[in-house]
Image 1: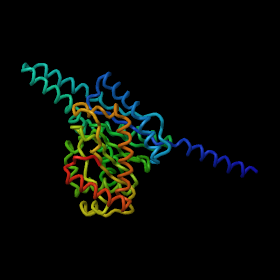
Image 2: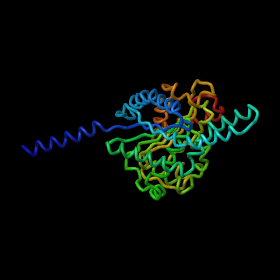
Image 3: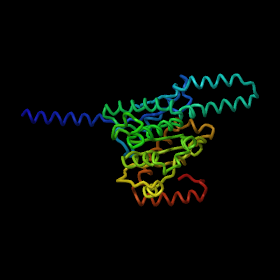
Image 4: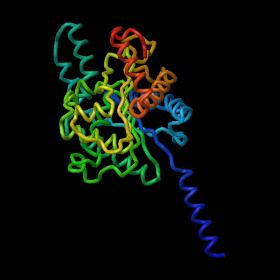
Length: 324
């Protein structure tokens, strides 16, 4: 009787643990969120978007256990002192109003994107992010990282330095626990503009990271609105066979995928599109779920892959005039 009770107790505890295991969406902020007002803007946007994102992931059968509470990882305040220095220097310049305005716009869009690329600024950020990921792992949870704009730099550097492939394992004292990182969603992303070395697919480091992603069931998708002037396609949508040919790296039982969708209409003016992902939450969340499903099918469903390749060919012939 004691043994039977003990076994039932074990099963109960295991079922309780499984029932509480969640997939947490971690939202990583954009540049220039260093003021209290901008921080609030980002947090409010995430809270508006997350319920719709959760709904679309669950509705489309991607995950049925998304944490109802978004997890916000904020780094914008780390650059505020350096940004203040630049602004103070600009105030010393006496120049025509147009020139001053151009400098202000360039500072607003470029400062933090360049600032966060520097290793001495980036490394503490991805270390803090890893601490957050491991804290979720300790609760039995898994994570999907959402990198908004320059936040996509953080997701890229995080994977590049923390995933336990050869290069990552050399740089990280504690690599990411196995099976905790489910995927990455980058959006409004100018990543290739600042990391053009992503084109070097034969690089042992980059190829090693991509191989690890594909072989360990991780997804990495990029979703940009086509009207977003700062949204750049991350990389080509390659089949597994094309990946092996380009990188000269053999894949062993791949189950992950990498996919780009920069063709969704925002229905917003160009000047407003980059900050419209929150206000168009329904359109954007549907685009993310659609991109996930298309990316998975493109890699592992031959019939769907053939249809998408044919559709892509027609799209390119038409000069991208129609939405896929």
